[in-house]
Amino acid sequence: MKKGNKKNGVLMGILMMLGCLPSGLLIGMIGSRAGIDIFPIYLLFLLSMGIALILQTALHEAGHMVFGLLTGFRFLSYRVLSLIISKEDGKLKLSRFSIPGTIGQCLMGTPAVREKKPYWFYNAGGLIFNGIFMVINYLIAFFSKDPYLAIFAAANGMYDLIMLIGNGIPFDGNGIANDGKNIQEMKSHPEAINTFYHMLDINEMMMKGGRSRDISDEMIDLREETLHTGSIGTANLLWKENKLMDEHRFSEAEELIRDILSKDYSLLDYHRKMLLTDQKYIDCLNGCFEDITDKQTTKYLEGSRKSVLSVIRYFYVRALYLKDEKEIEKNRQAFVAFEKNYPFQGEYQGEKELIAIAEEKMKQE
Image (cartoon, rainbow, N blue to C red):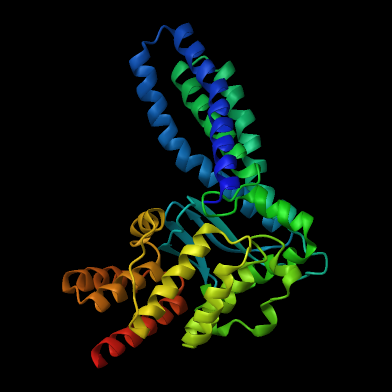
């Protein structure tokens, strides 16, 4: 994480702690007024926060969906934690999918009429819903005569306020850009709006079984003025690299990866790590693999090896290179487990091909 992001992360943490104070004082007042001991209050608070994590995240993503639909966007998928509901052939399908650094996501298809390119309400919809429900929860907490309901509402109001701070203040220090960061970039750089729309179109294509090799060159904007609009603009570099990998043009992909990592782009930490796993894959094919030594990166990859296909592929090919039969089988089983219920089947097939290429290469050697 860059120094600027570390400072912003500390500031964000302080603001979130301050955001807990109103609910903490309110819960203390409710317990004292009702004559409840501290231990039952503590247990109820912990239980309420666990429920609030799921409930308010669900409402946050529902806000994106509602305001997206109101401004012409089309529903594609709705995810809370690792459960995702997606639209496939006009029907709703339940599957499992997660992105490290996120606990929910609502993806929409672009509007049929795109001249004005709306983006603000869709991106801010989750914040609007959290603001509305924060007010409702605090009113219930303050006026309810039932102390247990009041404590539950206060905990939910606290989580709403935390989500407003965590998603509303522009930040990308946890590896993923939040809503405020996306809005800021598109407001400051109109070029980023086009990339944002292409991002949604590519997501829709991938959900319908498409692959990175199917991304048209016209959709990838590699002009410097676009690439320097922020993390949204640098997504074009990722699409190009993913396309080269899916087309098995490994020399070109390696050259692009080195070029991206050597320049001062506003690259998300998550994307940087994904590029590194592709680089290490290519190193294995070239017979010059060296283990990743950065502790932060290895910790992140270990935490993602059950949820991110390209990370599983990295560990699998690494095990092939090192001839570690136990790790080979472990990662093979982890990869196969995604086959039936993974919502992006084109991506799965692409990763399967990359693994097969590595297997064949290792056999030859």
